[in-house]
Amino acid sequence: MINLINTMNRRPFIKLLSANVIGLPLLGSGVSLFAAKSCAGTWLAQLLEEGQIESISSFWVHDLPQLPQAVKSGEFTASTNRIYFYQQRQFCFQVFEKVHPELGQLELMLPFWKKQADGTWKKIATLNAFDMSALAVAIEHNYTASALLPLDHHPATSSYSCPAGFISIKAKIGEDNRTYTEIEIKGKNQQSWKKHFSSTQNLPSLLL
Image 1 (cartoon, one colour):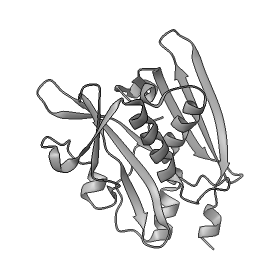
Image 2: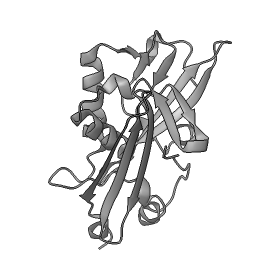
Image 3: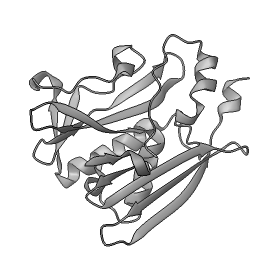
């Protein structure tokens, strides 16, 4: 499931945590509490290594897509000043982050756009930190990073299409204080790959 980012702003921090718990990248497992940037950073590094995307400073791009409301409101800010293009610049994405002054990065938001015939940009998908961790798992199972780049969104099935086929990602936090994520990739040859994984997250310790 492509997780949509709620545009709530100027809330007390504890209220923010309780309202947006499903979006928090609390990955645990011996890594930093908020390890979202490492997921996105690894994925971007692999994309750049594969040579399938162009990384361009926003200063040099004159037809930028319209920023999401969560960015306009100040809830999210740009993680870098780079715009990432792929498929002969017919698609692009940016990396935004939600940062707390003491705890650091809380969440990632990666909106993806597709250029329309009239030259405007249409948003086709928005990925968050849980989605990025799921893509990282897929890469560990022999999928290339570029094969997982969104090409179109399919709201009826809560999935998006990509060169590898169709991807569906679902994440939830269970009563045992673990984050459960499922990623399924249905290939164009009708073969499918599915992976369930979990990680301990430490939200209660933040509330003490």
